Amino acid sequence: MKKGFWMTLWFLECLISKMTDHTKGFVRQRGNIFEDVADVRIKQFESANATAEVENALIFNSSRKISEFWTSNLKHTIFFPERFRIKMINSIVTHNHPRGFDLSIADILTLLRNNLAEIRAVTSNGDVFSMKYKGKLINKDKLIDDIEEIQKDFTKNGGSLEDEFEQVYNAIKNDVEYIHYTKQ
Ligand SMILES: [Zn+2]
Image (cartoon, rainbow, N blue to C red; front, top):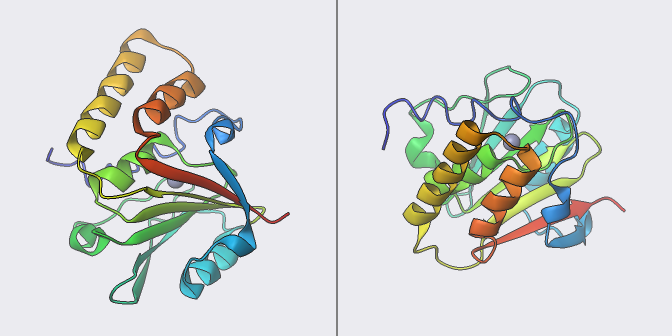
């Protein structure tokens, strides 16, 4: 694993995102927020942080029923200290997207690189975006390589973030479930 990646994990979180709703079209399923079976602690965190001005995160370990709050007090970024590395394995990480975006490529890489069970983001209107593996992910390393190659191509050749997200999503869509829970 590359040195330093941990601290820069979400560095580009939303930072390179355009000020538009760019990826909601890729959500495969839409559900009512009441269909969301997340633990009450996750839901409470998401309700409490939906309109927060900085990005805050909750790392929730389902098997140990332990949740831990973390923030870097930044508007578009969360830096996780090294001590979270083990805690994040098989955990659910949720956070707020103050600007209302759905999941970013950085979030997808966070899911894969940290062996999360699920990555979630709540927007300011209370909608929740969730991505998790459909089954056991056996080709994780290849998926990460593929996504990094796509990112390199777009860095080198340019292109819209929407196109970049589409390519990334196409690379993983058979392996993940991506749900947009809405309040209505
Ligand atoms: Zn995010």
